[in-house]
Image 1 (cartoon, rainbow, N blue to C red):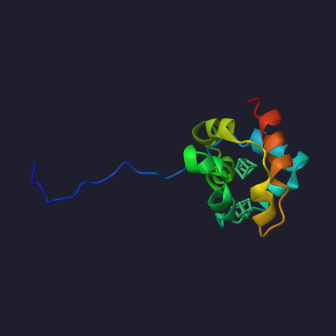
Image 2: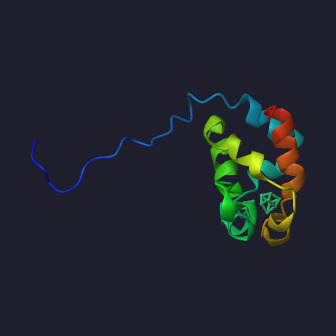
Length: 108
Ligand code: SF4
Ligand code: SF4
């Protein structure tokens, strides 16, 4: 094979129509804030736990919205429920309550 100095990475395409969104629908019914997130990243930038762990609330919510919960839910084990993300969220999302609802509905 010719070495062009770069390689193709595996596709990260998500087949949203094939994803099982039943738990996310249940989450949205209990917690409408789950679809308010605009992925600005303010929560992740202010998160103390994110400095030392892979916790990134923006990525967690994006993963849930795309039906990729198994890839992102383990991150929530590092959350301290400190509420800093709630203070900075421009959408006014009650992130602590949302995180607790996620843990309950996704059984983590
Ligand atoms: S509540 Fe959790 S996600 Fe939000 S800033 Fe605190 S540790 Fe990070
Ligand atoms: S700060 Fe709020 S709107 Fe921005 S990514 Fe976090 S939860 Fe979403």
